[in-house]
Image 1 (cartoon, rainbow, N blue to C red):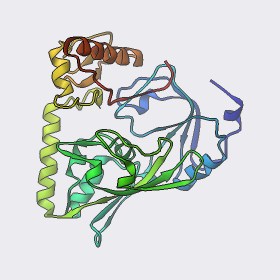
Image 2 (image 1 turned 180 degrees about the vertical axis):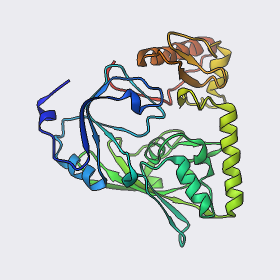
Image 3 (image 1 turned 90 degrees about the vertical axis):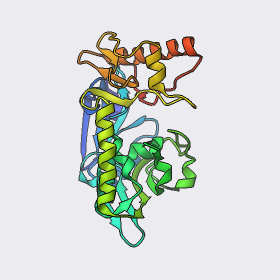
Image 4 (image 1 turned 60 degrees about the vertical axis):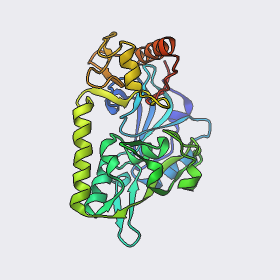
Length: 302
């Protein structure tokens, strides 16, 4: 995997790695290499890089890899991973009851910071295994709350390195979907909290965490919810009813604990995981007339 553009990359303060395996950066532990992996030092480093990088070079953003299958052929172009303190800072604006979080901040860390400041409304983030950048992109939510319920605004860079700022209304949020431009790499978001009692908020977070641990295979190689819930039903029920709970195909299966969680038992390839997901989708469609939609992102070359 090589190309003339990759031999003439912009000078950066972060890390540029060629042909870098991506499996270690995803929760499912599968996938081929990035043609180039860029780990920027900070926001300015990323903006400058995007402004100089030739426009024809594809760019893909990878957070903590909690809801993604990187295909076995790897990813063409540049994969950008927002890692480190520069992208994970969390601040509290006590006057406005705002929580200001970097796109690389873990959702659970944002929930905890809000709770420690006595701000309620973001407790649901304790149950989402991802980062704020991913939450903005897919309107992440659980236990009756979603990102759209608490977001005030966010800003990021477009593919050309220009700043884009949007209010929550401009995101055009629907269930697990945003209408924001797909090329924006989010840098920071502002969330609206509500004054509450710290201990009450922490107790609600503990309740959410306990429910998640009791119902989801959080210690497995998984990617979170595999399919979106169809209107009026739940994906786990359909997968279960179709007979796929715990059925092993290659090194992939749907969890016995929660049948909407795809599991890599240790030997699976990306093709195994995606193939199993597609087989389940086809079977559920044939048996129940419901077309399940992927919630896990599948990216890269087969």
